[in-house]
Length: 236
Image (cartoon, rainbow, N blue to C red; front, side, top):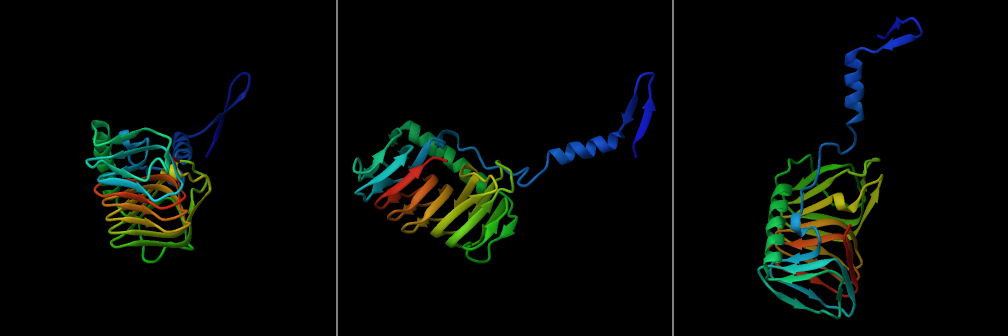
């Protein structure tokens, strides 16, 4: 396979070109290679983005990001709940963010399905990839997302209708919340005390009940984003 060529001062190892190609290809592959989430564009800075309204029941809640609403402008429950970022309601900035959200949503919905979800995600461990269901996606308990050592590993979960979470998302193997995408065909509901991670892009609405946390984004195209009491939302 290999050969040696003698020069006047040293031996030179000769490696066939085909072997170099194999090494080069091996170094560029790995878990999740070739799969990437969409660009959020101007929606990137938003922790909450809604089509009609944003509300917070309170008495406490923290959104460590910007909040936008377009084309609606109704916001209730603030400043009892706090927003650390900028606020844009029914202005050109919020409209642009909604446009970029629509583009990102359609890009996610257009990804080819790799694995069909046939049961509740609770108690399972998922490798990087695209997972899809023609109906509702449920998460009761804990789902573990394993990046398998790749910090860019991407996870896309496509729900044909709703998303219901009553549990938690755990990240291992260098997986990062910014690379987790939940594309929801109707509305997403995060139950009381749940620990959610990833970007939720919902066609209609997103609801976080009391004490639920989100490391990611709650982005609703047409409906409202509704918070309960003592929610914490921070960008991944």
